[in-house]
Image 1 (cartoon, helix red, strand yellow):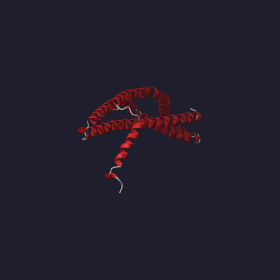
Image 2: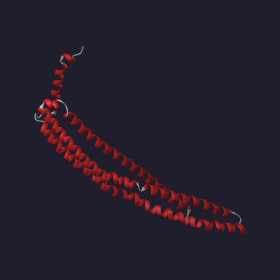
Image 3: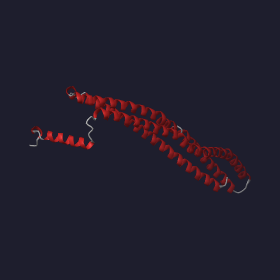
Image 4: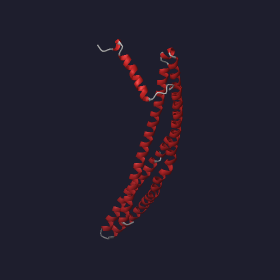
Length: 242
């Protein structure tokens, strides 16, 4: 192998390893972010269920039938939302998070192969330098014997390095390019899970709106109504400023 060719292959190999290390970092980050996202989703729906349960247990529900009916409808909707959310998270766990974890599990073996190749390269360079040193010496009998021994020692080490190097040069690009085929089904499943969830949420909250929005007021009208009631409360002597 010529020196120029060797340097070219070395540069290509460094490019491959850097690209693969970036892929490993991105895979770990994506796996971590997906877990955080699903944990946040579950926490959100659990909090919503807790809020609706607290409202339903409010003493006002015992005194106001209309308020009781509204809080009951809200509580039912929040429980439905939580159930759909748990189903969505379960799907994402199976189709996205678990495959990401399995994919990340490949990198330790790949990194070990890179380390073995690096060790083989160092052994190759060391013995190659030894051969070159004897080649530069005067061609005496003992020097030629040592040169022959050094070359014999170098030959299996060079073959071992070239085999390890060729294997990685052949397989690393295949591994890197396979990421799209591997991840595409997961991301498609993620989109489907989100679509199903938000479709169901539209139904849940549309039904809830129909149950509690008897007056049919707009958000602006409700805001004005709330401000009017708050103004009445502020006008009471027990909350008036001293």
